[in-house]
Image (cartoon, rainbow, N blue to C red; front, side, top):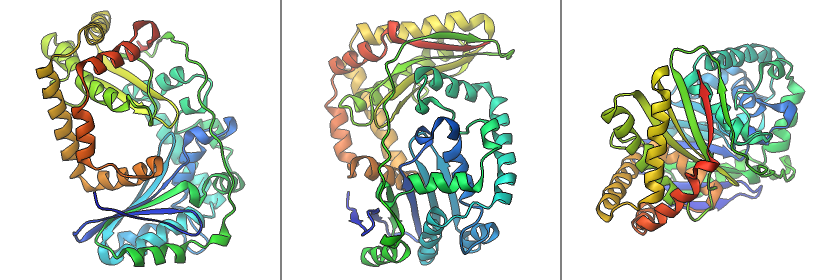
Length: 406
């Protein structure tokens, strides 16, 4: 993969992947998410993401909204456990406008109190809407179980009782502490001159404006599996089980990624879908997920079913996990699954918005971009024995936590 990188004088890193199209994808990946909040700051990272659109030292909210929209572009943002991402999609001739706007809102937002008061109402409504969706809420509650007493388990949206008291000074303090150029990557996928791109970065970010300050993350404490059932008075039973898993840098990460895809990935031929839905007709949706973080990870299974089928579905899930622990996959089966995953990855790489976002996040976390052919070679090297070894560790029944909504 051909890409260009530079580190600006203030520490911010830029990565550019040339692409000969009329559209540029660009954005800022900030190494700050909900896990970086103090106990009384829950929801602050996501709250800041919303407030970045509400005014800067030289722009009001309307000017921010229209700056790219008026030329057919898009400006968006999202918050995760470990990152905040602000990104834009524009025609090539308006890239300068997009880059300047992203840097302006990231480093010069003023967080007007009147805008805060309005936006808090919107975020609280978002939280309440989310709470009305048990199939989504259970994922957050399960993460809180797996990472009990640690901020990585906190709900990204936060708590209404805290949000309602956040002020301009709270927002300014959080941004000043966490939004540091050396903790950011600006990514670009487009047909641009790299030297010009570098000069623009230096122009919009002046070194003397920032003071370096390290913010250290604490790793989650020891894990204790737990089973919890909650009466939600729902029509369906919503069920999750899972375990702590490998972090972003663990050598077994790719193996678990493949194993998870086999077990409950997006393909209709996943083992759990074939068992619970196709063979037994007990669920509409069953899936497994693997989420690695910088110093830990989580693997989980989710399904929703009628109350009378819950115990049977749980038994079927455990049976599939037991097979993967006790019997190595055949060489032919594993070859098929590898081809499936590599095909999914190749198709995903053609979706340019997702590719651009992964470009920035990969460079932030690894300091490099691994080309698809190299990843495929590592997938090819995975053996049935290695996957069985991973299954024995991660799918260990004595280490599984369970959360049930009834």
